[in-house]
Length: 112
Image 1: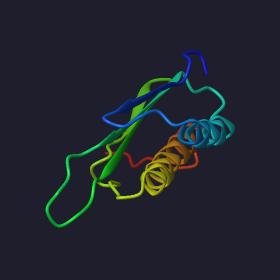
Image 2: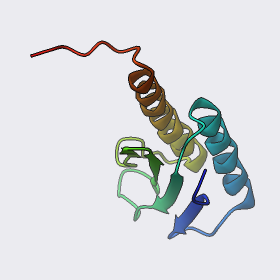
Image 3: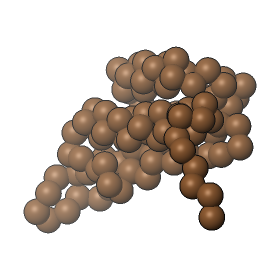
């Protein structure tokens, strides 16, 4: 990765265990696509809801040559921060896999 990994914690205290989990998952992304340009991960908590506890959202921005892949944390929000990290990284992994397949030419393109 050309740019260093950026991990931001908003409205929650930084956690070494969470940091290690994110770094482990980014390393798996680098194995899928060796030419990642950068990755930014943002972990934030929402205010308490009346019916639910505190929700954690994880946003992942991955920069690859010619494109930027983003998973917004609104769809993967969860009361458990680690589950939110897992779901967000599962979604970005699918996007990176699709990017690699398109770049390799495994996906057919339709002519107009």
